[in-house]
Image (cartoon, rainbow, N blue to C red; front, side, top):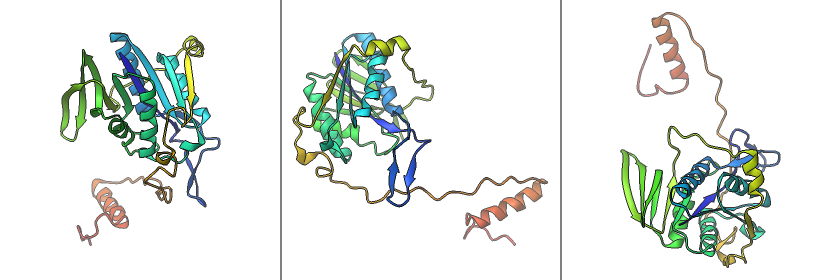
Length: 268
């Protein structure tokens, strides 16, 4: 059994800053982390490997420093790490990213299961995983809380608007993972990190994966971001005190100032 896990290095969302003149993210000096949803997908893959054997390949696309998320995957138990890094990938949207990652998955050979995080916390589009499935021509299970393998069957418990549903499909397939309520992410020990340096690691360019340059980077991206801007800052919370009647009066005054009661309540 071979499981491929696609992960992304993202800026720590508590540290994100925006250049107000250019409308772009300031990444210099901002710490990066593995996307939390991808972290869970990685742990799921390693758990399946422990149950059924086989191997896990962790794949990412990004600048050379994104190797850190690959190394984390290897330290947690993945067998092979692949980083797609090439200036030709710069500016890729979710479609172009899905295309490149799918080419990398194909290059690894036979894959029984592809796991991705539901979405990246720096984009929240939830498009890359389904895009990879489309490019590979395999079935997909989205918003999965857990994944199980029974022979050729892939079974999952997935979140829906009305609750949960249990689904299954045949391998090869792709699943995108949500974060369960009781999820606790694991981190490797120093020994595991040291041992991971001995594992197989590849850096592939667009040429290495046979990517058509017309489908990657800014040129190959059908969508473009015109502007990035932060939401307006809100005033600090207001503390109120007094009797029940006084609190009601103060609360109504606050709601009026915020226009929450416009057209709903006329209080004299």
